Image 1 (cartoon, rainbow, N blue to C red):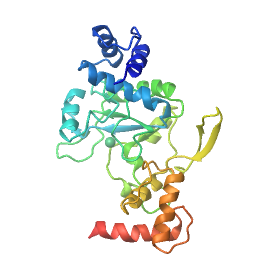
Image 2: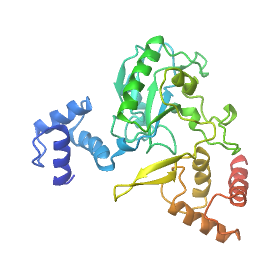
Image 3: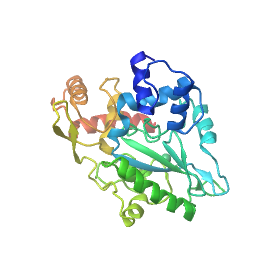
Image 4: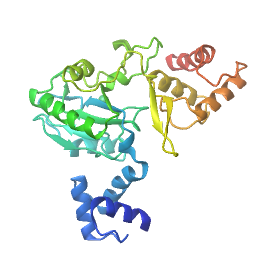
Length: 299
Ligand SMILES: [Zn+2]
């Protein structure tokens, strides 16, 4: 870690910004993150948010469940062990909501989480402990305390992230049939095992309009201080980008946004396959991609 980065971290946590991390810096970082872990690890976690400005770009708050039984009141340290055991760098969720309704720190506010494929860079993940019954089937078994705690926490989070809209993990499944609606048959997971959008809307919280408007137009800040309008993340496009990635073409993040890089990759794919060079997921391109890769997946 560079001297300059250490100074920025020190400044952000209110330590003396001399670029030399000592015990005082360690204490300040630990307090900011509300966790105990080795200094270098803390600094990396903090730097991830500082450097990428991750927290500024949060457009979705995805509600999860831990897929554990009603009687299991597990904590963030336990889930971290599971996730690290799967080869991840840290717990996947930004925050955890315990059975008693209390919020526990996961990966933290400023870190990019690992909880919803294709959307991690723009989504904050909060997970309710629970979600399955004795036989392991999806069950909405959140406690009244958890639901009250979730409502309160979401109220605070939408204050922190004014662009954020709330949805459930399952609402971010790909729209495989392309009809603009994420039907239960398309859910990759039942998570979080209850219908988040109507619940959150009933509490007056901002919710994602998942019924087909994933290609919403959003304003993105540009260097000269203005904004440009681009199509926002689109669950269907995330799925199609995943198919496109399987061709071996490189085009940047799978984020549901067809930017210059995705368009270039599409034109190459279209050129290889004798299709019109539209640079978009047009009908012929989608048909070929799905025909090629979905058939293989089914075999
Ligand atoms: Zn989930």
